[in-house]
Length: 128
Image (tube, rainbow, N blue to C red; front, side, top):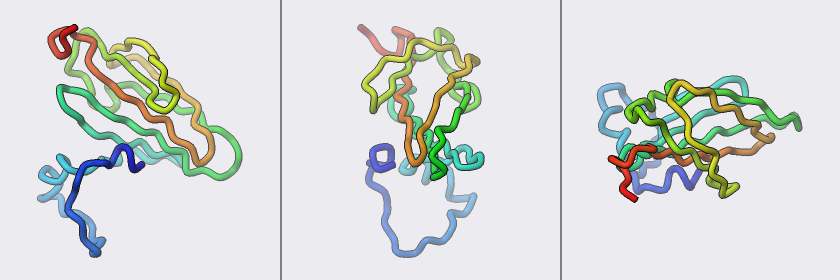
């Protein structure tokens, strides 16, 4: 998870929960845990120019890869009407162009992670 949390953030030995009133301020520095289902966690960080980093972490140790399905709309990534380009960061692979409502399916190995880089397909956001 270090690659998705690489931005400098305030450090403290005190691990008290963040109050809801402070959460909007801190989301610019921290990665958000969006979902936790069984042994799977979905983490997301907004980058610049409507780009995102999303990590799906399998904390399971049972030796069985977990199947996971989500859409960008589930992550509240819906701004670009032309869809988004998806990249698997660790596999160095372009996964294609998807609309926000399209399901994305993946298998995550035990104690493994799938890291996605998501950017708008629109030329408005990223000139060629």
